[in-house]
Length: 228
Image 1 (tube, rainbow, N blue to C red):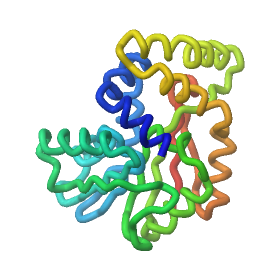
Image 2: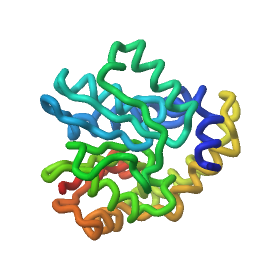
Image 3: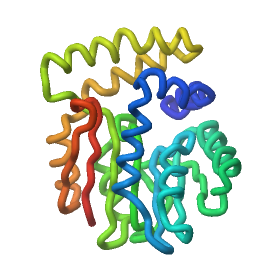
Image 4: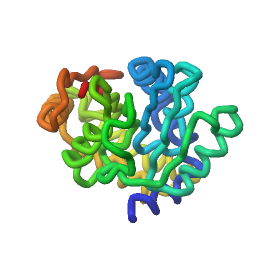
């Protein structure tokens, strides 16, 4: 509930602050994730933590016109923005916004071909459980494409990055009208989050095969992929 309420508070300025705080690099990160997740004819995707719809819209645009995406999120205001954007882009017929939780997906077994998420994993309380749920709803041969912030492998660059992310970013967010408390939480949520290598192992231990990752922008972010 607290996570949902926090994201509802920051929903109106979420996209703008993402662009400002990441210096626009989040756009290229999503573009890469979308390239790895394209859907074919009549295939179905699930966007976990869809937020305001960036990944959902990008995936629909890049995929076959006969494909569709279920956009799932905890925060009603985020989903309302996503729905408005889907209507404005003419993609609403191919997308269904759903209020839901990654740890208990409201989907039957083997019902989607692809699962994507962007900057959601850090906010999941029981990540192994959520990964097992992802595997449950994937069809055999289906893939996950998970984009998340990560820990840079360089200690020196990592120290600079943490200073910016934990000290500077919340103040910048406040200047642009953001919720300073929320933008203090978001950097803190990265501290206990596993490194890319550990996360890849956790994904494999959840029953996925071919678990791998690629680092982005000196390791600030990473995309994890795996198959059922």
